[in-house]
Length: 248
Ligand code: NAI
Image 1 (cartoon, rainbow, N blue to C red):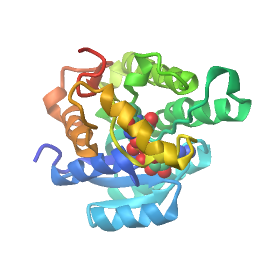
Image 2: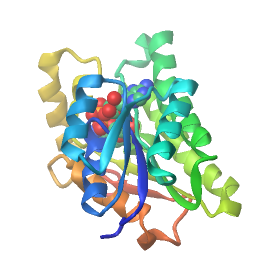
Image 3: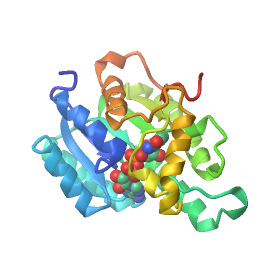
Image 4: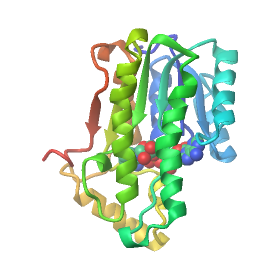
């Protein structure tokens, strides 16, 4: 068990990749808190992860919600060893159709949300903690219709470097995971007409040399590596987990 006695907070742990990470953390002996916005999926995820993890409703764009998240975590578990700043969204729109609200929404959740998820955790994180931010291969490629999302993920990747540099005195390591195509409920929230989603999913599969989507547990196992002592000499780094999409 690589995460025995470790306490983790995973934002967006009620769905998709965040839930996959929570499942793998639980299997490795960790406990802690998953957060998200939707009560129904939070309850379902909490039932799955019980008794190791509890769910706390918390929006990453709300400073008071973030403070509540960490207060509840430390009240219940006494410390935080691992933080996974995972919550994020994507909306697809061609450049000439991007509207201001959709621009702000993606930057608010994906960039501002991740920044303050980490900043507000700092007083509660143990020295030597591992922080993981969820970036994306979208930060590497020019995906059509995703100019804003891609830019947010490039910013997230940058946070891994700067936070690692600033937190050196506390030996807090911040690393990024950049998944490729992982089939999750996110694909149904892109803003595409519902009947176009299967076609979009096929398109993403074709971009992947392994010719399939990745699973949330394949990302979860990489998160276990970055959260554990196995990656003790890694900081400010990015691990790309994409079935060869970027490199081959
Ligand atoms: P998902 O839609 O299944 O999960 C996203 C989670 O974020 C949900 O639990 C949702 O409740 C939470 N969330 C969204 N806005 C929030 C807010 N304001 N406050 C708190 N929680 C909020 O999506 P998925 O695919 O699991 O995405 C997770 C992360 O992985 C995102 O950052 C996404 O950009 C990233 N990613 C996903 C890829 C994929 O192919 N699915 C590829 C690369 C990166």
